[in-house]
Length: 348
Ligand SMILES: Nc1ncnc2c1ncn2[C@@H]1O[C@H](COP(=O)(O)OP(=O)(O)O)[C@@H](O)[C@H]1O
Ligand code: SF4
Ligand SMILES: [Mg+2]
Image: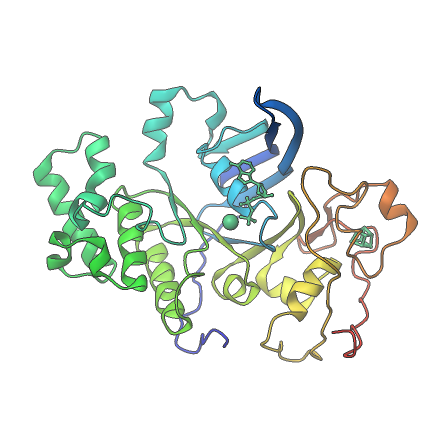
């Protein structure tokens, strides 16, 4: 079943490329792999491995890639929920890496995260008003003002005042995502990482939540990093899209340009897996071989080469960098723009 976006409203971007809200340079997040009773480090898992990214104030930047490509790790590292292994992060002109505990706490108000089931991971014995107001309490907002802000925010996400006195298990999946959004929004952040916010929802509910995200963005002047593995969802809501593969950004372009002119073979394969044909394009089916390789021992040169239908010897030797191919459309491939052949249906 595919997502019905016919009722969804289009994104409304007021993004200005000269106004960068979040900036990452050379960002890496590696996890140690430990073994044995002494927990000796035996290897390193390169979940995010050298990402340069600008997120413009007011835009929705989509981040797409198969499961395990490092999307969630990138989102969390940008917010310093995870400590970066290397690299720089700037948020609204502030060097996030240099912030101490107190500075980071103050900064957190401005940068929030919403997960696939944000509310499901929280204490089920807490009432919605306490779940939503928790961040305000942490920031020392007194009860009366807190209650006012909680009710106002619940209303903004489409939940009644009575919801405040209920418990999370009394709500449907879509409503729980609204509670998760209220929990983030109540702090009036500037930036929200929405990590697969609709992936666990019924298709019929997905467009309602996507619409709400678009409305809230407009109303509260938000900037989003919108993470999903489904290119149709990402393409709908995003102004620009970054495609991630094995810890690296392999393509970055406006949504329109990415769909019209996918330059990287991985993007072409993701697009071909999209059940909705793109108007004006012959619908191709490209089947990738195997799974995403382990980020513990990624392939040399181009990390995509073990699955790339057009790989050449140079791809094993030289790592392709993200280069501009016009209209700020970047792709990291030695043969960017080569149309990859459709997989014969007998193999598909
Ligand atoms: N806390 C962690 N410790 C060790 N490895 C992790 C941790 N979090 C994620 N990983 C690994 O990092 C890689 C990227 O994961 P993730 O960022 O969750 O990808 P995605 O969100 O694209 O599915 C995966 O191989 C995953 O197993
Ligand atoms: S650099 Fe080579 S292996 Fe990598 S995507 Fe391009 S053609 Fe494929
Ligand atoms: Mg994830």
